[in-house]
Each structure stands twice: as structure tokens, then as C-alpha cells.
Image (tube, rainbow, N blue to C red; front, side, top):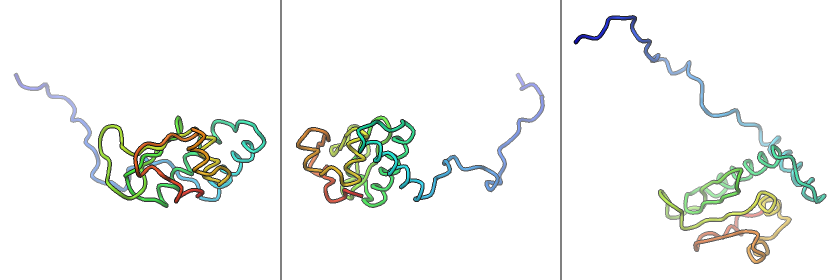
Length: 142
């Protein structure tokens, strides 16, 4: 049975210059540092930063870590805001990675700013690490 003749379906344009990027607009490094400073100021006072400020500060610092320690052998998780793979070495591709660092957002920001030492955070159980490459002491503070 032949296909019913109807209007032709529109095809995707071959001109890729018109397509918009799927990536969000990235803010400048200055605004990222101001978000980190704002989150740390609230944490220093003993308060809890606004969720959006906390999220932006964590994501900016994770991106900075990935930029400073390129690679894919360690996965750094700061739930619920983000995770990155970083540090040169054997690449992880599937399943649970062998080298994982996981912590809460407030602890992560204190580590990034140098207000908490890596050894102290691990000893106190504020940072969970697994794997022999999961030592970020050489990369923190950022």
C-alpha cells in the first residue's frame, strides 16, 4: 500500500551557524569568586547560605578543580550540586569509580577556601574517600 501523499515534512537545515548552543551562558570568573565569597561569609557566621548561592559556589569550585587537575581518575562528588572527574591517571568509564571523594557543600567550600585542612576533614569523617588516588590535599585549597 503506498504512503498517502501529503505535505512534505520539514528537514533540518544544513546551516549549523543558526543553531543555538545547548550550553548555558557561563558567568565571568569575577562573579564566580564573588558567589564563593558570599557563601563563605554566611558559613563563617554560622549560617546557611541561600541554596542558589551555595549551588553556584560549589559548581564554580568543582569546575575550577577540574580545570586545575585535568584527568578522569578521581570522581569528586558534592551532592546534590555536582560532581566532576579530575586528576590524571587511569581513566574510569563505567560503574562506580574506584577513586571517589564525597562531602557536603559546606565542608567542600571550607576545603576550597583553605579554612579546613584535608587531613582534618578526612579524620573527622566530614569527607569520605575511597581508592588510593583519592587524596586531594595537593590540589586544595584552590
